[in-house]
Length: 265
Image (cartoon, rainbow, N blue to C red; front, side, top):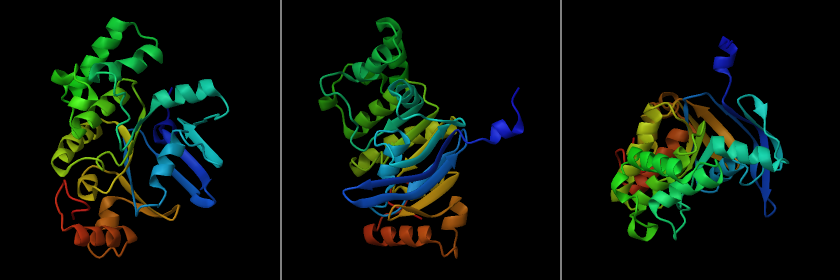
């Protein structure tokens, strides 16, 4: 029987994470928690530690110390079996797509279903087709990455992650490698996921877009969490927040505004 406390418990939580790379501390006592169906956006300058944090959350780069809990249970990073199960539940979307060039879009989505989840080829194919359709690529299933645009590649990557039925999605600058005219198609898929209740933690500079769907912003700088709060709190006029100053500076430098712009306010 579920209780109010169960409903309020974070689905994913990180406690006091530290990470040092090349003698530099890139995560310094970072903690976060996200509830089911919520969207948390990580922002901050390059080198702030956002990508490292996301990779630590999925144990692609294990933290030096600290604790990561999924649904209240700490993950044992020493157990390969437990890490494999954890990564099925916490999907990762990278900046550079990470598709297999020798596999078609369909095969890129299907391969993990067969090798990790143990599905038969027919069942895995049906699921892969469904997920490609979900991201608007039902007619591109037989194409290889070389024949897909950057936006289409990223949507294949999202379909691949969705096929594993993740409880949480981690997105690391999902539009940073895309030409401006292709950004919108990926943002549209991300918006649909948010509206469908997907729990997401996303690092991005698409602040105008993020402000319309994020429950919370978390501003990072030099490996530390500087401030966090709702978009209204941090970006509201007169807030005087570090977040607002950062976004205003980016907008000034790029001259871009609007949903597809960098930090358009």
